[in-house]
Length: 453
Image 1 (cartoon, rainbow, N blue to C red):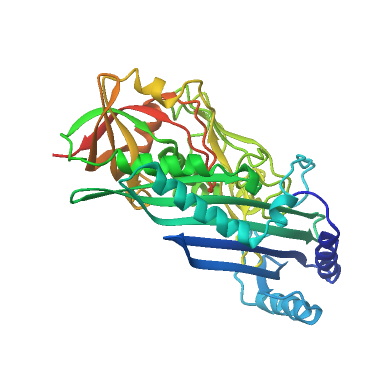
Image 2 (image 1 turned 45 degrees about the vertical axis):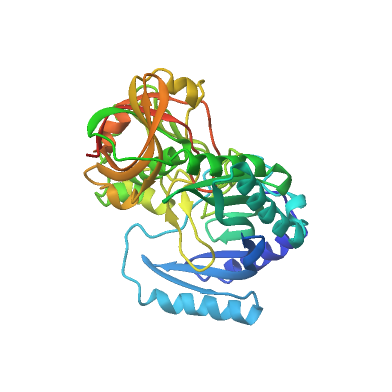
């Protein structure tokens, strides 16, 4: 959230008013938000799907004697807000006693100044958004005669939030962003392969349609003629998009809530070497290049850069105020919130690896026998966050004698999260900011089992 605005004063006043109604012995939190999004999907030059929606509402938590009551409403009508507060108080009686229940408290960390709102996006006309999706489709089909488009998409979102608590938190701000994605198909005789491309920006002027189209065409066409490879152990290079998915799995194991519940393979391993020395993993929502950048977390604490793994050593788990109390530590300002209709959770906000210096082509030029993993399937279901067992379907390109070789598909790569982190050889310098909570970068991992024929 960022940039003061008169309308935010209105939201903050509503939150302040609710907190002022607190009675002796109770903690009260008011989370007020309004926001909207636009989604455009184009097929064959025509609009296939269009949604432009807005929503506003308030969520209120009341905590008394270790019991928590929560209620919300999708309106900011004053009478409705009074009813939500009354309902939250009523719901306290149905809550179970939790010794760690409580609201976040100010911790003295100042907000990092960021520019997370762009007026150019806020004022961008609808017909220009539709035109962007159509142009993305045109550029993709023009890239190669074998390529057609399954769908081309433009999407944007904006949000304004104010939060106030009886513990002294009072924050408000706003943010917006946009991205385009395209799904491609490449045909050759009786074979069809798929690909994708995307671009993320804070404003429409920052979107790179040509790159998104080129990536989608290239990813699909280079898989034409793919066969099932021979099973063996080799070095893999994860494409930046695949690395981002992999990082999201790793991030879930560093979640403080999972740790205190005994659901993380890294529980009790703080201070230990859990990855190769080249690995530096940070969660940094104060980096404005991240699509999920923010200056406060879901409880109103100032967002901050948290180093999770440094030179391969596990340094920190991410915590909300609740998981921190359970773990006997302090919040890392990693409370997550889907909106006014839910209570805070905990999770990584904007993960990224400390980048290296070399491009993907340079990394490949050092590998005699390897695999460039372009796409994975069933990744989340193929990972056990407690044991670390890792197995996922994949497709990509063999690396033969330090060059990109034949395309392969219908294969499985398997290892454990622990082994993969320790076997990282190099991190690329090709950081890719994605419309998700993790940035991508090429990642070289040795000794991974590829199962094919």
